[in-house]
Image (cartoon, rainbow, N blue to C red; front, side, top):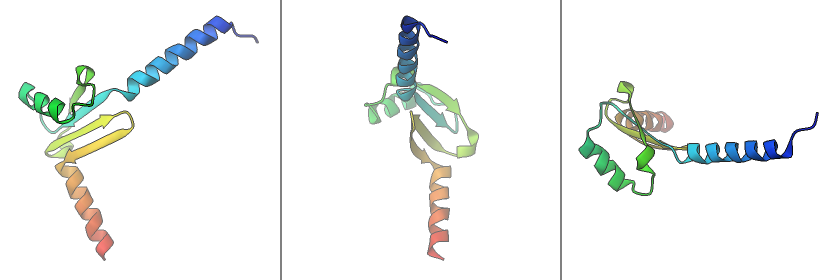
Length: 94
């Protein structure tokens, strides 16, 4: 089966654009809803991220703080993440 070259080129450019968009997507998870002041503080602190298209979600399991995901990178500033790191450290000491 032969594929139309123009269709193939259009599909490839569409997929590359979507991959690029997904890699630049910012997802912020917090234990409670963030106010506009808190969002401004985060955008100043992490000014190199594209905050215009940021998605904000509430996840009560993180107890406190925020988790910021950009593409495949994760910045964990949550209490649950800190407790998990402490637990792993304590188990390594034994």
